Image (cartoon, rainbow, N blue to C red; front, side, top):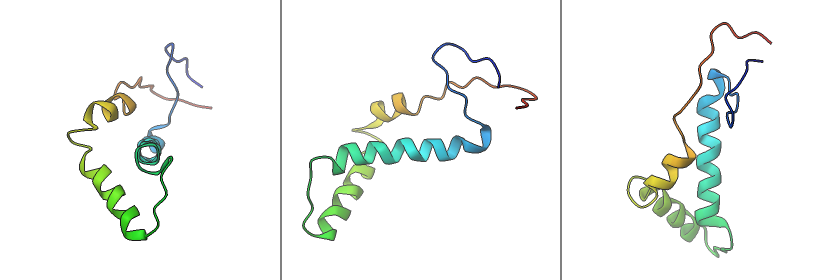
Length: 79
């Protein structure tokens, strides 16, 4: 495995999209699901849709810190 900068985490290029999706899902759980009970599916769906609608304004700064775009690239990595 390559040497990483302090505070970095190695994520293969093939896994970057999957990693971003996991972060987004955790964020949605925190904002919509934790401590909430939705009696009807429509209320749950509305809460998820509302959270996603706010990603470009209300939650923009939070998501930018979670989805940090500073990556350290390596050439010819072998395990």
